[in-house]
Length: 570
Image (cartoon, rainbow, N blue to C red; front, side, top):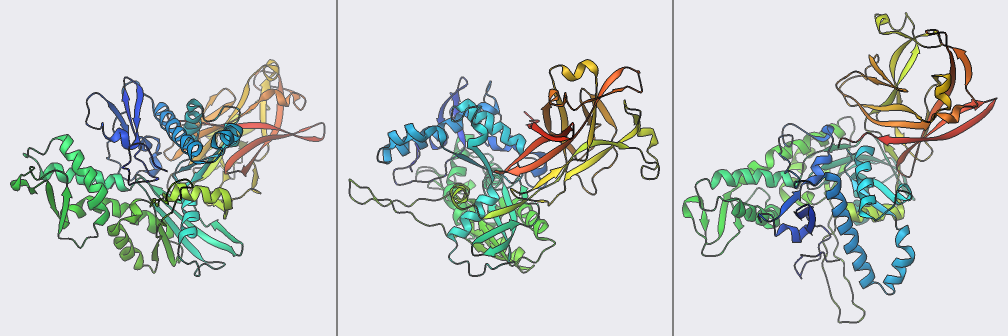
């Protein structure tokens, strides 16, 4: 498949995530948009994936200081994603219709049933997925009614393991019980996952522990080389932004892909024979950089990648690590990782990307060499085979729970107690529903301990929802036990505690409890009130966390729906 703006001899499945806007309207995308990077008549949206990364993915040493380019005036992040998704979908549809016999008829019949798989960084969760869902609906590729059924969110790590095992020359080393890691080193993220082979035939894999995801990758090398060039060309007539951007593009296309650390001279071919500035190392349109200058752009990123990988593998003897991804093709990165991981007995295995031969039925045979993208190709393989049956949670997840105060357990915290409307003395705790490294599969279920809700008589029959906050503990050390809550309607939220993050709400219509509620009196006011007892049940299906309410109604067990509403950061 050839994307608009690609050279005629190219059919690269990978395109730049760039959108060129004019007065808030998207005009050009991908390779075509790159032509307008320095054009003052266009506003450029680029590197916008970084704007969705949670703080947990950012590392101080290499990437936290990266300044993300501003979005065009009046254009929101959701709009950029919506415009870009609409463009990708439109081009893919056109290619299918024009290159498939009876393509238009097939699309008319099946187009609104096509499953759409988004490959996202390991570190993303339902908040980022909610942004992509909203953008997809705005783009018109799904509707609010069918988005939940047609949109799938697959981690780049899981897509990469399907890709790597399909294209590795041999998997004779893979036996039942074998541990191995897969690292997908892309443009802005590095996703690493540790797997155990549960079965050789049929091939079944399971995640061993929480996957790793850090903000590091190829664009940070480009950022580093920009700093080198700006310093090197200070005072040169070629120090203008347009010339430096052209040099960086040429560096990314050629020099970076060939650099392995052995070259004493590294050439960036950016101009013609008329471009000369010997004082600054430019001769006949070529800028020469030393090995040390190029290495400078790599060092912090290599450190972040190696540190993330060593943390993932710290407690395990892992004989193999499969390296994939666009930046994973870097000879320098491969050499450095082989050296660093070799010290702990881990062999780095690379995947040689295949060439695909396409034949025209009506013309002479045409051969195209297509550079594949591990995540995209792996997503297709995942949808067809789904080798992974167990996935590990990355953090502790839970809810606030008011439990009966026990002076023997809650020593020193009596001042944090409160009196429930039923007269009981309670204290707030953080109840973990999903411990870190929990292995999920489609059979997994977990129920919150029995909960109590109290309403004034008129409240229960009125319209409204019950909201329960879902938190993740991302801090160091044990999860905090006691919290000092701030009460809001039907929902208690904790005071600010570093590392404890509310990222979603469980919501249910409170009227489902009408027949199960029992009449009581408030110990505070003496007024009549309703007491409701329920359990919140979680399950995992189709890569998504699901929730439902369970309660007893005159001795009969009942269940009702509960929605999981992400709290987005936008």
